[in-house]
Structure formats: C-alpha cells, structure tokens
Image 1 (cartoon, one colour):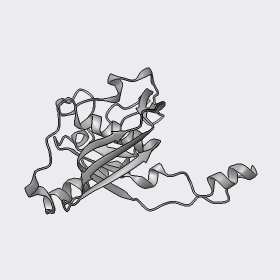
Image 2: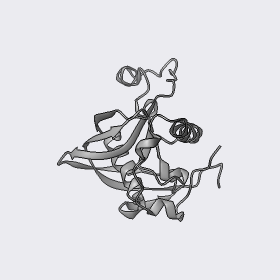
Image 3: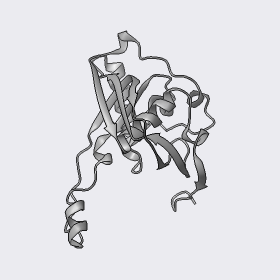
Length: 184
C-alpha cells in the first residue's frame, strides 16, 4: 500500500496540475483512484484524500461518502434515550472529483474542527463556508456539479486547498496535538 505523504513534502505545497485529457478512462487513472481508495480505506478517521497526499501532483480527490453520513437510527435512538441495538455498517461509497473547481459558496461561514491525514495528530478550528458547490469530472471524463453543506462543504474546501498547496494548519486557529495510543 502506498503511504500518505506528510507535511514537509514539497508536493503538498505545490499547485497541482490538471489531470490530462489523455488520462481519462484509462487503466492508469483507474489505478491512481484504486491506490488512493486503498490508502483512505486504511485510515479509519479519514473522509477524503487528495492526489498530492499520495505524492501525485494532480487535481484529483476522493471522498468516502459513507463516512460522512450519521449512523443509521442515530436520531431516533437519541430522541428515545435508548442505546442502539446494532450499528449498520455501510459499504464504502467512493466519490471521485477530477479537476474540481468551486462554483459558488454561501456567504455564511462556520467554525469547524478539522484535521488532516498529512498533518497527523494536529487538530484545529477552521472557518469554512456553510455550503459549497463544485464542478468536477468523473474518471470517464464526464462533467458533473455537486453541492454540499456541513461536512461536505468542509471537505470540498479542504481538498481543493490541498490542490492549491494549502494545508489547513496555514489558517487554522487553536491548534492542538493529540497523540493516539498507537503512535504515542
């Protein structure tokens, strides 16, 4: 499995290049997406991953959509005060965003807790737009638009920042370091 590069790697500070036309629909692009998916699957706290985090200077990111959704029955269990009887595990749902661009953002912004797989153990508070709409392409080259609020808006901005050589620690406040038991 390919490793996720860490802060200090030059590729994280460069502006990523657009995925070339000749790469769309090829086994090479499919392999890049498969490698990114495998790396993200391994990171249980991860919800998205940009190509520069894999050492690849392309404008591409993936989202584990299933990890952005609340657990099934969470709202009804909370309302009743009862503990959930069982937790449903959703199958991985990968969304691919190639050569993405932000089309519009809400005026309102909100402070959000944030971390990054390329800045392990560091967390902080960022100010992100509450809603973001992006235009991107699928692996086959077709164009689509997707809007999102809350965590999806945060993901869109965080990952596009990666594609522009920006890490969340560049603008986050109240940075803290949390060592996990496995790395302490």
